[in-house]
Length: 259
Image 1 (tube, one colour):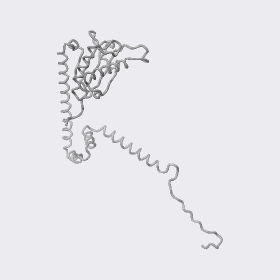
Image 2: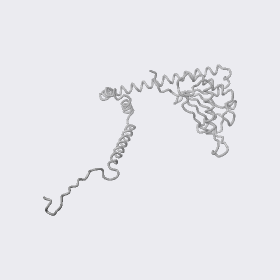
Image 3: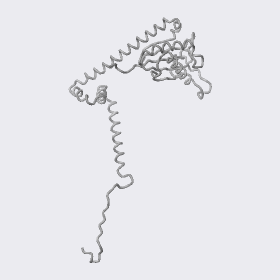
Image 4: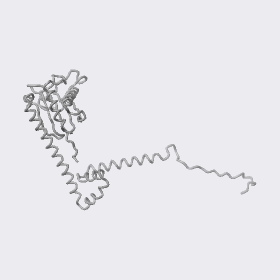
């Protein structure tokens, strides 16, 4: 078409293509993240519902993805159970050895304290046993003697000396230690809005921690300091019984294999 026909020049407009709207394609990224998170959730829920063998297999993959390929062949041809059983047996053997080690240490500590004239009369207030978390050394008040001044976190001299001696023995082990404080149910004034048995039990646990440290136990070996107040009564039939006032020292299983 010529320009002289009265229609004027032909103008061609080219529109640039781009993201329409303010957000563009950002919603796609957010949606993809959401789908990925949901898939991860479903995988976790599926694993939780599987047998111990499957859980061990999945755990083995994430611990050693490269070596898992060769192990997986054994699982496909029926040998996987044997591998898992061997691993489980190794864990059980390790736990049994460590339990025996802690039990021997507890027995040696008990014999040493009995042989010491300073602690001989306190032995009926000391209980050493193996529990789920490890070796528990518990010292409790009695009507014959108490370890703290009534209503305070101040250790009496005999208790201070006892805890220092225990700290010196625990210093020989690499295990982490938990210290727990327990009280009876006698309340403080203030209806729980002031100083309570929770503060008292925690303060007593920290007093025990300081005595253990003075005896030689390294500060880095303390894993937790717990104040239970009267929530873990030893004598539930009598919440005010003096035996509910006690300190528990737990030497934890290390959970690490040597070598």
